[in-house]
Length: 280
Image (cartoon, rainbow, N blue to C red; front, side, top):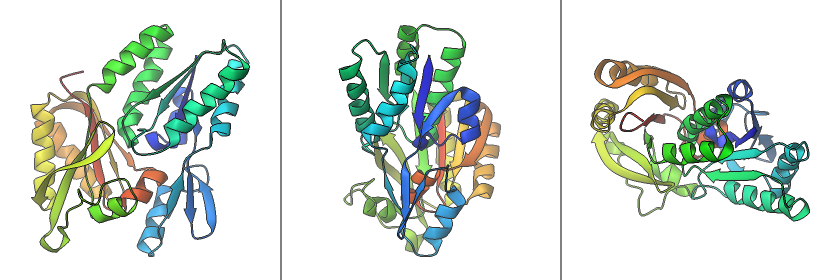
């Protein structure tokens, strides 16, 4: 059984390889040059471009890329599972659907399942990690799909950004939902609801945002493993990790950089926390 993902799960290429997953990258354009997410550009390079006043633009893999990769494995008789970035934030999942259908037109008995995680960044990444575990444990495909869909009901995204208007300008958040707060050091707290970015609260200063994240993690029964990603904000990420380990049921928390595509839309200073609710 072959696991395929896109680069918006924000797993590093080495982590994806460790999990046995093939990665289809999105494309990032800066000025007149295009780069394959993670393969040809790093998060640090994207953030530096933003600091230099440039506006990175992103685009999804085309259906042909998905068709070619799906076919590579179905031609070998393998079953394929694609775990995808939220369809409400990108056309990537739709490209995967079209790519699957192109394979099925030629080979109707090809076994390809595409799953819309309605998640982003390491929210999707945690789903990918669990999917790889289920495959490694030898579960049949029907059982894996059932487990993954259950996991999707419990995944939680909590994050803050420096500027909501940056997200709105990039089309990842409605302009009506973007509220200003920079002059008063107001920090937004957002989550993902039905695959869309939704600002839910605002707090004065990052310390109060982190306090609220910790409170929500406790209220929602977070336990076991969590993950924090950041865009050029490693110190803040470690501060949040320390509080979570001291005050919640989370036992282990990894920290990594937000991937190049996601950071193209969030800008620098973003901090995001991902975990499963209700002890899932």
